[in-house]
Image (cartoon, rainbow, N blue to C red; front, top):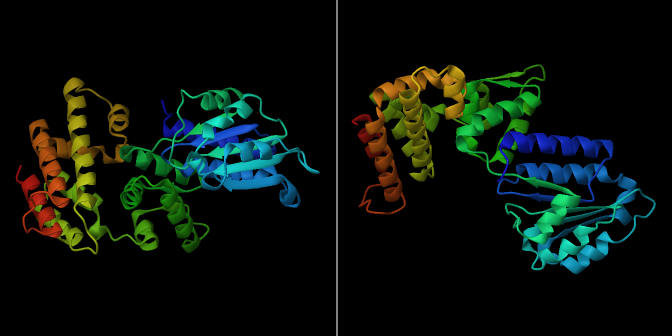
Length: 346
């Protein structure tokens, strides 16, 4: 089973710290649907395994589409030239037709070689000998996608490690903009930091809007908040803004709306099972900052479980229509307005 992002983050942090100190495993298997952590580890190993003066004779970087197991083993079996180690990196390793043939080398890897197998957006079969040998003699990093309801917590942790504090609404806004694309968040954060004073460490929603190019008037985050409180006029106005945004498609709205009402339903189930649940338990169930619990209390009052189930069915129906199913002549913006109006009337 893939580890949660907190465990993956801690493992990768330890690997990077070891690399900085010059400590390396003979083999690394970097894999997973979410490429952010494998890429960070791969870059750190390349950066710290060799000095610049050692790279010409001791570094081999290739791609799975352009190599095979025999070539990789031949490179890995060489001894370093005027260096403590040599580095062999295979990127897009999942594209190698005979990747499993590396199992024999990984059973007894050369201690003076650092071999990195980077499977971009893919996972190695854990029943195979190759995986078992690397697990035994090297280091495995498996990076599963961060789930959408975990993104606020991931962003807060990410900013904290950079010496920044981000408000919960700013984290939610950034998560809505980037989805679960961790690399996109990292890139946008670096851009934002260049535009902010060095002394500024508190990041607000306004900072995200001004430096990441998000307009909150077109935000699904704003729409879900107004739907939670059944503020019909404002919810319909925001839906009109969103629908008329360039390149708008229904799937951009139905995914976040489904997640929102599914969280409300889970929240109500917790309250029915444990009416005395504390703030920490509620926040953990939803995967949100306690800051947002008041909104969920309001939403639970406005949308009892039966209504939530009906709304989730509606969202699925309009998701299908947005993909061309039984939508008639309705445009994408019109479909969104219909859906929001029906949600408000539930």
